[in-house]
Amino acid sequence: MLDATLRGAKSARGLRDLNAVLAHGEPVSVEVIGVGVFGITSSRDSRQTTNLSYQIHFRDTWAAGNVALGHKSGAVSVLGAHFQTIPDSLEVLNRFTFAGKSPLHYLVFALCIAVPVFILVVLVICIRSPIRWKWLWIIFILPGLVQFQFGWISGRLNVQPISLLVLGANAFRPSPYAPWTLGFAIPVGAIIFLATRRRLLLQDTTPEA
Image 1 (cartoon, rainbow, N blue to C red):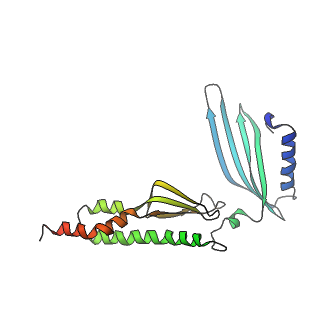
Image 2: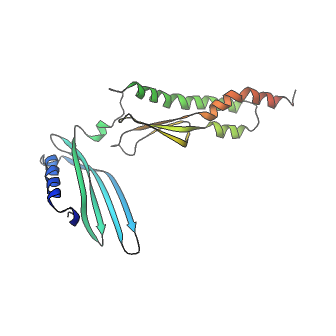
Image 3: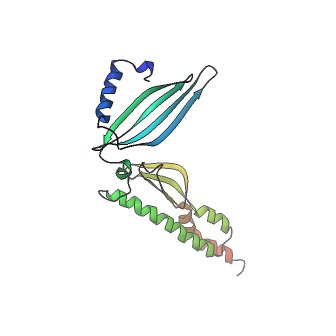
């Protein structure tokens, strides 16, 4: 099923390398852990590529990788395949744990808890304060601005300058096989409200006095 462009000495070496990874006897289990479909359509041609990701459990090891399939004129061909051995299942390797983590991991985790708590406290103060434009202030307080995303496994910290994050923090992963990503944002609205609250109260009570 190899695509015609891949047939040759290079693909033969690739197949031997692939065999070295997968030649561990009958698999205990084979799991499809990801599917991606990409299509290109034009007036002359229509092509589609399907990327299948697998996790394979052998008796003595694990392997993970992907196979790319090309669909053209009703025919299916293999465009590429890559597998590598892994020490354990992806669920175990990408689980959320503090074992062996750096101080940065602990700092990010603490911020992901502290920022929402801070926003909620300020939100309660805003709701209980006799100020004008209260609902606008509530909307302004709820999100955090400038999001920081932290890969729990990779330890990489990325910044998204233009973004809104409700309650200023989140945690997600695309699937049970993928690593966790933690995010937090600067609670700009909550900070501005606390800094200007006294002035807002004075402005609101001046006519009554």
